[in-house]
Length: 244
Image (cartoon, rainbow, N blue to C red):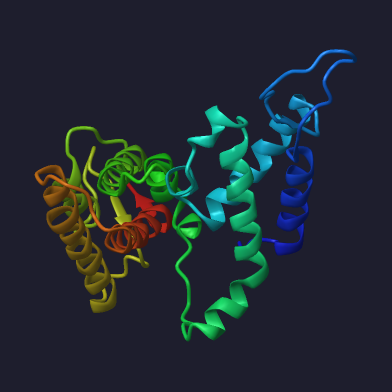
């Protein structure tokens, strides 16, 4: 679902108010040189608010932990990275429509959080830390495992697994099938089953295998496209009818 902009901005404003920096007054009769800046709010309240705004950051700016510098956390205040991220995300939310219009790009946006849960849940933590190739690899592993779980088979995996479970042949003992349409023996049914098998083979031959044998990372856009392809396959598996 789309971000509730008004709610998100309200949460960010609350966080920024709690983390506002100020220099506490020195005790009466004592002068400290170079005393650290403190936050207006109590640390317990800031921590609770941070838990919420971090989820907002992840939706609007997934790589905020690597894109926003953290060096001032040690030198000035532990929340400096969060404060700058909050300011950036707030601006992005307020002006996202304007920016798309003025920059001439009003094309649909692919939201990774709306990919099939098997794919995004497997990839999210690695994605947010900028490890795109590894995020795609883990998503492939997760999809394979969920498919094995659905058909209760551990003896086969990946291409062999998908070729067998999406076969148009009748199921056999210990070899169930996944049907994406009513198994009426029609050309449509056979074609759909073959299409899913071929798509799955393409995903694991052209995405999973190269990732496991290559060095270096993927570009973010390329990795997102690959996650989207895996999401299509995951949705077919999830929605398919198990036939034994």
